[in-house]
Amino acid sequence: MSRAFVKEDASGPDEDPPERPVSPHPNYATPRGARLLHEAEARLAADLSELSGSQDDPARRKRKRLLERDLRYVRARLESLILADPAAAPRDQVRFGARVTLTGADGAPRVLRIVGEDEAEEGGELVPWTGPFVQALLGLNPGQSLDWDGSGGPERWTVAAIEY
Image (cartoon, rainbow, N blue to C red):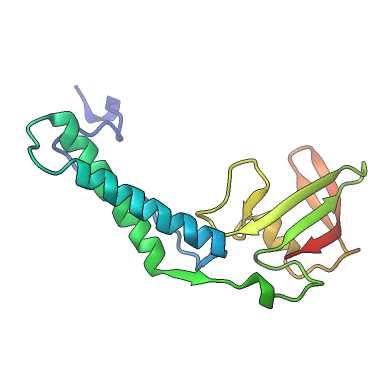
C-alpha cells in the first residue's frame, strides 16, 4: 500500500510520535497559566513513572512515548515562560491578562480574558493574546470601538469595561 493512504499520526508502538509544535511567539503566561503548566508537568511525570519497568507490551511502549513527547513539550513551554503580572498593566487599556467586556452592535455583551496560548480555550472566554482579534483590541481604552470583519460580515465591538 502506498504511504499516501496511511494516516500520518498512526505511528506504530515502536515509532516515535511527531513532536508537538511549539509556537514561535513569546510565551507570555498569566500566573494561572504558569500554574497549569507546572501541574501538567507534574501529572505527566507521575504518569510516566507509573509506566517504568517492563516494556514488553506494545501499547505501554506507545503510551510511554506519547507521555515523553508531551512532557518535552510542557518543559519547553516552561523554559520559555514569560510570567506577566496583570497588576502592573495600565487599568484603562486592553493588555495581556485583562478581562475585557465588549458590546456588539446589538448591545449583547461578550467577555474575553486575554491569556497565553497554553491557557486559552477553543471557543471559550479565555482567548490567546496572539489571535488577530485580540491583537486588534490591544491598547484600546473603554469606550473605544473596533470595526472587525467577522465571519458574518462587518461587526463593531466597543470596549465596555476592562478588569485585571
